[in-house]
Length: 277
Ligand SMILES: Nc1ncnc2c1ncn2[C@@H]1O[C@H](COP(=O)(O)OP(=O)(O)OP(=O)(O)O)[C@@H](O)[C@H]1O
Ligand SMILES: [Mg+2]
Image 1: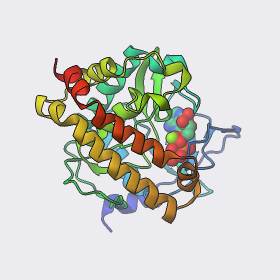
Image 2: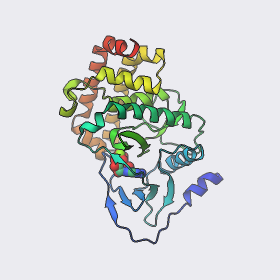
Image 3: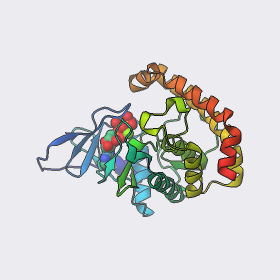
């Protein structure tokens, strides 16, 4: 094991203060995430050190919008810095759909990619099932509203790097757009989102992130192919990892993904017009 890896493994966070543990909103998979003072404690996971090494790198290149890995506490939990701000809850609220926030998310994802491009992973990320592309960079891969910290209506932080790993800029930015625009069959839009213009919002995201012409042309089919991959991955995780993955699958996430896929293909000309016009 090299010097950096052993330093990560022996990094301990001790604190003598008696601050209370405050439960944080539960996500879909990880249980037991709490806030203690200006830190977050999360259960240690197989990918924790790979994520920690990446977060260290982001710190060294001056990226200021991700938590710092402070070490493990006496209970073995990962300790990360708490990022101040507002984070969307599971129930969609109108402020999450503001165009200015969408644009700021695209800009933040772009900034993360620009910061990550030179990173050579020191630690092995657990392979993600059905990953067929050649990786360009390590990145977040789960930029959902629940994993973005906002201040004054703009995205200022990215949290929950559990799914981080090698991927491509387009996959990660498209995934963020899918959650934030959002890209889904209108029958699956939440009540507060029924009046949004998905095509106009996709264009806003594309321009803010800076998708290339060729990426825009291919986007509907690329996104449909990603939906297929995502359906397979979710099914695989539900069957093999159980827990929150199985619950999401039982709640019908697989069908939602298939409806998204059909919608993307059915709207291919409209999406291309919105992106290229
Ligand atoms: N470093 C942090 N700074 C600020 N808030 C945080 C931080 N980490 C977590 N939170 C808050 O706690 C919530 C849950 O944390 P997190 O996203 O890390 O776990 P999770 O969503 O339960 O995990 P998973 O998505 O794997 O199921 C977040 O949505 C956010 O509100
Ligand atoms: Mg989360």
